[in-house]
Length: 98
Image 1: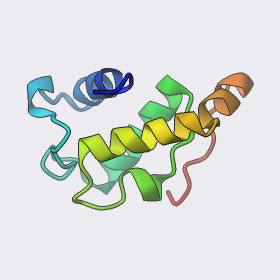
Image 2: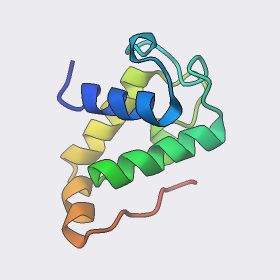
Image 3: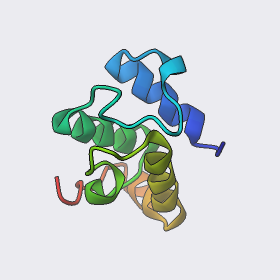
Image 4: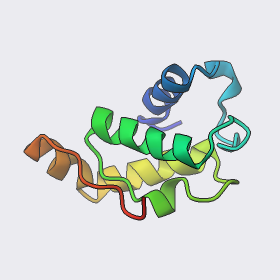
């Protein structure tokens, strides 16, 4: 697993009261019971907690998006500098497509 896998899994479990042992890389957000509002809420939590700007259309738009795919999207956002930009200004950027 990657460096952000466990922190994101913990945030997901805590915020939505989901047992952590039910979250695997292949688990879809639909299987976890997150509707579209829940997915946007998760994006906001991750942006606030991690200081990242995460494109909603990439991370969680499809019902069959897996947790592993979402973590990969967050890591890509971090790698392209979105994390530093948002954290540096002490704000979170708007969610694209939300």
